[in-house]
Length: 174
Image (cartoon, rainbow, N blue to C red; front, top):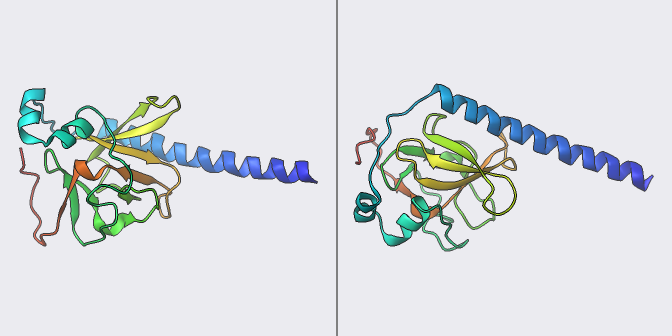
């Protein structure tokens, strides 16, 4: 009986992870279809725009310590934009408390705003998320988020800025 219960639980875990990975694969397919006008700058140009911490996280693919970033526990209304280029990344109504210490969202602003890549830096596969406009490292996406997407975009606070203005403005920061 214990063997049967273990088998059933293992199958449930396998299929739930497979479903999440299929969603992430679908995101990658959508990226290819939807190209965004890219911003290209030298490291020196980025260093003149970003703080040292932002440069480390966004250009060198670093990570801030959990529960230390500006936005991990902020739930104000607005749009989260890329701190490097102003690209709209996430709407505040998709933010949730994942109890992980980083801002977490269950959905991107739209599929053209974020690109993904496989990341094996820690010895296992994760899916890195980057700003599609400037290539800045944002964090990672995991298949353990809430409905309706089942995804958790885990984002470094240093890579985003909360825009609380009510007016719709275009991505104009360069």
